[in-house]
Structures are given as C-alpha cells and as structure tokens.
Image 1 (cartoon, rainbow, N blue to C red):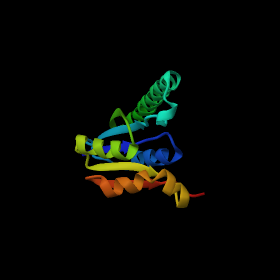
Image 2 (cartoon, rainbow, N blue to C red; image 1 turned 90 degrees about the vertical axis):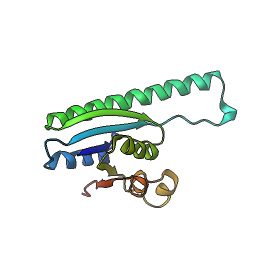
Image 3 (cartoon, rainbow, N blue to C red; image 1 turned 60 degrees about the vertical axis):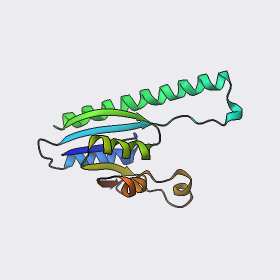
Image 4 (tube, one colour; image 1 turned 120 degrees about the vertical axis):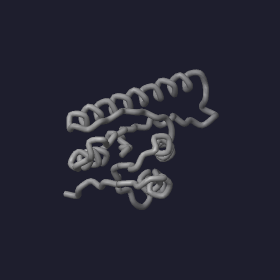
Length: 147
C-alpha cells in the first residue's frame, strides 16, 4: 500500500501524523510525506529588479522550509517504525497533492483539516475539500481534536 501524507507544519497536519502513527499498518506499507512550497505572486506593475530578487529569495526560503519540514516528519515517522520518503513540490498545494497522488499511484491520501468556514474558506479555499473531490484515491481528512 502507498500512502501520501500532506504536511504544512500546522497543528492540523500534526494531528494527521499522530493519527497515522497510531494505526496498525501492514509492514509493506510505504509512506511519502509531501510539503508544497507556494510560489510568490506579485502584480506585474510591481515587477522590477529588486522585487524579482526578493521573490526568488522568498521562493528559495519556502522551498528550504518545506525540505526541512518533510525531513523532520520523515525522521519522526521512521522512528515510529514506518517506511517513509520525504518529497517537496512547488505550486498550489491542492494541485500538487493531486498530481503526486497520481504520479505515485497512491492508495490513500492523508491530510489535516484547518476547519475553515465562511469568509476564510471562501478567500483561502479548502485544500481538504478540493482533495476529496479531485484525488483519484481515498482521502482521509483528520480533524484537530476540539478542547
């Protein structure tokens, strides 16, 4: 079985990881942990040499943070006895996760839910909702426990 886990460093992603660690998986289950570095977007009227340099630096920083995150999560899952590979993608997390599921031939996609509603959901979108509707495999959305 191949399982893709989407992580973003949030408490919601941590809840998904804790759920994964708590389950009894078959020894041949392979996990891939993916974090997505979002590209920087700037209006065309603001594009000049200084802004372009800043954008490249910001994108490189986001990529490095995603690499550090997936490496840390992979170590954590490996210490829990799971076979795991860290990966990083660039782009919109919704599309990147769906693409990776397809490329990997994953049987399951696991993500945390931020639980956005109302205006936040309208403005920021819901990655989990998009994945449930577009991923070609089953999607497990883990919610953060309410206290």
